[in-house]
Length: 292
Image (cartoon, rainbow, N blue to C red):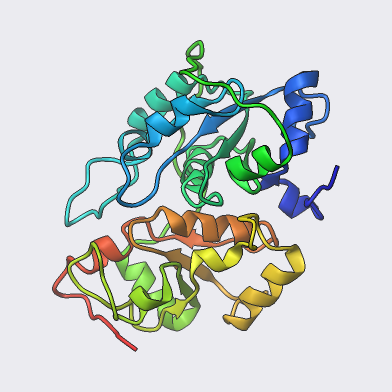
C-alpha cells in the first residue's frame, strides 16, 4: 500500500484509496478521524449534465450522489454569480439528505481530480463540519487500486447535521480587489482565460487586476492526484505565497477555486474563497478588467 499523506496538514485534507477501502471493510479502524466514512460522489464538470447517469453506472460502495448545481449552490444570477453559496437552511437539508450526521466522517470524490468534489469539501467546512477529506486521485485512483464499484442509487437514513456558516474565510468583490494589491489573489482558471484570450461562459474576458494566474489543474500530477507537499509548496512559493501573506482564491464561479484552497490547506496555508468569482465580477460594469 502506497500512502501519499505526508503531514498532519495533508492528512486533514486528503485520504488515499487504500485507506478508504480498509475503513469501509473494518468499520473505520484505519481512519484517524474514527468511524467508517460516509462517501459522497460529486460528478460534475462544466458543460456536462450526465453526472447522475455516470454515478449510477458505477460508484464507490455505499456512496451517495451529490448534485453540485442543485445542492452545492444557490440559484445563479448576474449579481451573485453562477454558483452562489447556498443558505444554511438549504445546505443543511441537502447534507441531511445525504446522511451527514454531526459525527459523520465524510470522504468526497469525483472523476476530475477532486476539482468538483472540493466544492463539497469546502462547503462542509464552511458550514462547520470539519471531518471531511477528499479522495486523492478520485474515482480513477480507486479503480487503479483494484477496488470494487457498485451500480444503482444509494440512499441513506437522513442525518442530523446542523449547518453553522462561517467555518472558512470568504471574500466579497471589494475584498478581492483589495487583496489583489495588499496580499496574494490567485486566479484558479485556465491560463488562457486569465489572459483574456478566451471566455467560454462569462460576459467579459480577462482577470481581476493584480491577481496571479494559478490554474487549479497544475495542483495535480499526471494521474490526477494532488502533487507532493514539496511540489505544492514550491509551486505556491513561486506564485508569491509566503508565510506572512494573506491569500485569496477565485475561479469562474467558486467551484475549482475550492480545489486550490484544499491544495493550500494541505501544506498548512489558509486561504479565503471569493464565492462570486469571475462570473460575478465580470457582470459588474463598474469593475475593472485586466488582460495580459
